[in-house]
Amino acid sequence: MASNAKVTCPACQAIDRADGIEDGNLFKVDHFHSKNESALLRAVLRAQDRIADKITAFAGSLRFVYIHTVWFGIWIAFNVGLFGRAKEWDKFPFGLLTMIVSLEAIFLATFVMVSQNRQAARADIRSQLDFETNLRSEIWSVHIGQALGIDVDHVEKVVQIAIDGARSQLAPEA
Image (cartoon, rainbow, N blue to C red):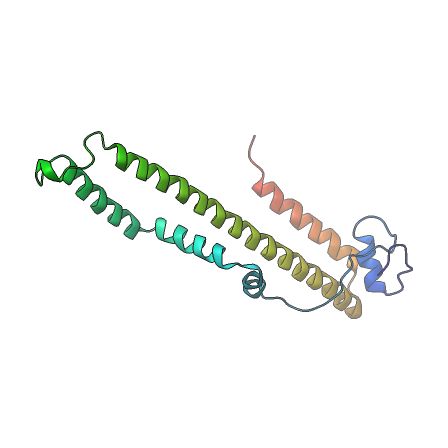
């Protein structure tokens, strides 16, 4: 509905009053289709993001820890001379190992940030779909309530009391 348009439907008039200003300005709702968050995400997910997610998932696993524990153990064992001094290639304090681990940490941190960005994008999509679903539900509820002859203003007062009560329970104690 356009802004400042005359609202003739009693249910839409109740929705219009909900913001405290009866101005004919309702949320613009262009469609009433349900969307699948996963389908939308797949549509925007690129191959490099999927790879970053897989690397991050692997780096956050115990398998990753076990492989690194074995790798570090073997590296150190060779380079402290447990297999003979001739097999040492990175003497204590293991400068090459330190450099490799530092580079790995830089790349892993980047992969984690890329994955977090993907998760944030997914959360944004989910939030938008939740908003649309909630808006759709509210509009339908008001129209159904109006058709049943339910006092919209009374219901809105009860809802506000319930919301205030829920918020007071969540508020930190002083």
